[in-house]
Length: 141
Image 1 (tube, rainbow, N blue to C red):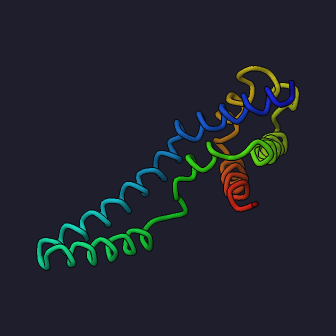
Image 2 (tube, rainbow, N blue to C red; image 1 turned 120 degrees about the vertical axis):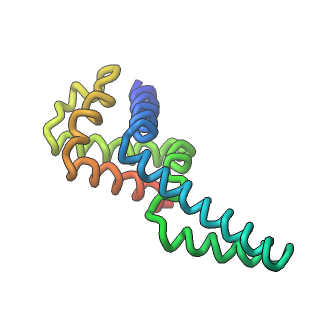
């Protein structure tokens, strides 16, 4: 039963991250980094041929990385977390929500986790806490 709840909450977290306007802003940063890489490759190839395209692509990727933020396919990495790391992530996000005022028993109900995420993510501290939990889940190995 607990494994089912963790799995459901993980899916709800992923849905929230993909539909969150803040997450969309982050995704746009990722697209921007891709445009830098593509633009650099095109410019290099146009001016110096195939080797220029290679060098331009590398330079553009570096520029995009330096201009970008922490987004590095974070949602995809979170989707692929193994079961134990998912549990740690959900536990940390749950703690962030409870600290913000969410009722622990409401988080266990169908849709309760999503509702709490939407309601409490209005607070900067909650968004920061959820983001830190996501980064922590990807860092811990």
